[in-house]
Image (cartoon, rainbow, N blue to C red; front, top):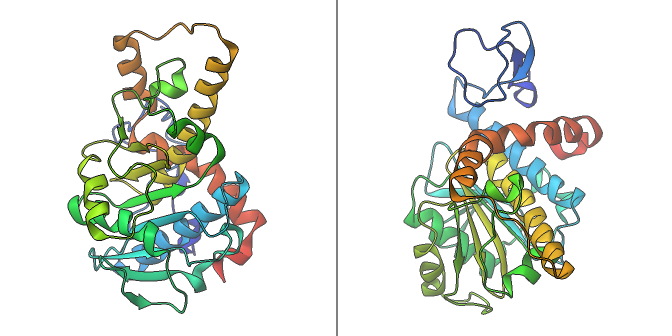
Length: 281
């Protein structure tokens, strides 16, 4: 019998339509599939497990910076509530038993730890303004915060950066200010419409997913990598050859979808499930 942790890796795709160019034609091959749930409790367990895995993935990427950084995912049964990582607990030490459930206002509904109030203001504002946003990620990463100081969008210099072409924004409202008031969150959230990523000037990176916490987490990892790529090119002093808008859009449509982000997270999930079983404690 499969546990919730094992759901999602099955043989073949049967007659289902392809979700991406990567899906195999052969029905007998082992290939990740989006799980189906028989109860809210099962889906909640799944989301919490993946939230913990996303935190552990951020630890693998060295995205920790003191207590900064927060990831959220909606509860499937109570969409006005969000599961998030606990305040002042290292990403590597986040586990099922110390996750926090909170509402829009940051009130703790379940859990023993506090939450990062400043961080939660921004996340809660986006979740509240856009009911379709299922998950969000933010961390104070080296290249993301450095690139955010430039107030620039990513350029389509590679296939990787093309995944964000016309699918990210630079937010200048509340630039560099610590969010302590709810209105600050609303200003940031209003600029986050219809995209999967945002660069908050003088602050850092945010990603949002209408699909899964896995997609939000992977696209955050990818966004940090793309910031590093562009800064490396800029540091060279050479002028990069940009993809044409048509090519960039084509690449984004094929490699920048929510599903592809979810798919990219699957090997990370597999590694963590095998090497860090304590995350299920």
